[in-house]
Amino acid sequence: MAARKSTKKPNVSAEELKEYYREMLLIRRFEEKAGQLYGMGLIGGFCHLYIGQEAVVVGLEAATEEGDKRVTSYRDHGHMLACGMNPDGVMAELTGREGGYSKGKGGSMHMFSKEKHFYGGHGIVAAQVPIGAGLAFADKYKDNGRVTFTYFGDGAANQGQVYETFNMAALWALPVVFVIENNQYAMGTSQQRSTSTKDIYHRGEAFGIAGEIVDGMDVLAVKAAGEKATAHCRAGKGPYILEVKTYRYRGHSMSDPAKYRTREEVQKVREERDPIEHVRELLLSGKHASEDDLKAIDKDIKQIVNKAADFSKESPEPALDELWTDIYA
Ligand SMILES: Cc1ncc(C[n+]2csc(CCOP(=O)(O)OP(=O)(O)O)c2C)c(N)n1
Ligand SMILES: [Mg+2]
Image (cartoon, rainbow, N blue to C red; front, side, top):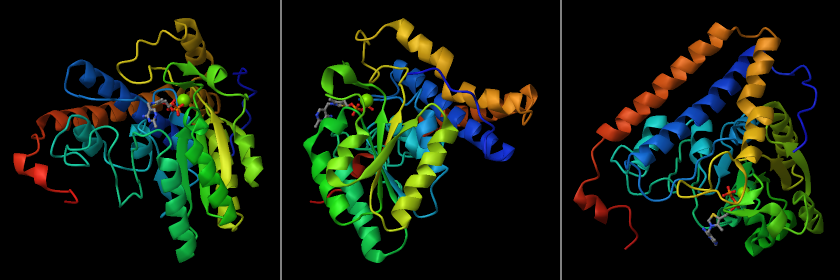
């Protein structure tokens, strides 16, 4: 990744900038706490942390309108928090408790919120991509002006169903923003080893789908791109692709020994490109916030996350007869 370009004066208010700082910090601290609880044996199964990628979802959520939908992969805690789902319910789902979004029966990859229009959490790589187009199809049918954000990774972008979906989404001019969260790795496989081209978004050209590259470590750049993409969809012009270049700091999942990249590589991104530090600098250098203001936000976030962790430990395990509910047959 190239070094960050000169920080232009942000075209958002100080309040908005503070809000993005807050939301990104909530995701980071929540994920750090989830990592701790996992280490303590309180979370079982798979757990994929979003640390490093916070600006992607916070920037895009800032470009949404009420009623817009979102669907993503297993790396989903950030998406849930950014669309306003309750941290208590998300953390309690991670610990498999009754107070969780799926009553403790789904875990990290299987949470949903009808209220917040969050359609999961999908463990099968790229499975959410056709689902996202389906959601957009429904909105197009209803002619309600809504847009669906369909998130997937650089690895998922090599799945066949993505291109079947591109074809239909373009054919029917569906209001869907395909967000490729390109964090450069698919488990232990770097994009260089798996993908024939450096950029992925231009594969959309074969289907007549426009797209662009976005700096995923800059929340303002992400928000601006999100606004352009949603305007395109809402104008009835069909799908749009955003290839958001980002980076994950932690392993693929909690069980990843991370032998496929150097510590120095990760450290360099943390030091030079961190999305939260970026906003922190903008706030301080623009005198939109003082060190004390930011400390107060940090304190507030810590409390929210600690409360979620307490709730996720205190909420009881689901009752045995819950085994027979929420099933088809
Ligand atoms: C169909 C399918 N194949 C393989 C896997 C195993 N798997 C889980 S995540 C993953 C890598 C996906 O990487 P990417 O799309 O870049 O997303 P990221 O984890 O980087 O967010 C693989 C191969 C799976 N879950 N589903
Ligand atoms: Mg990836």
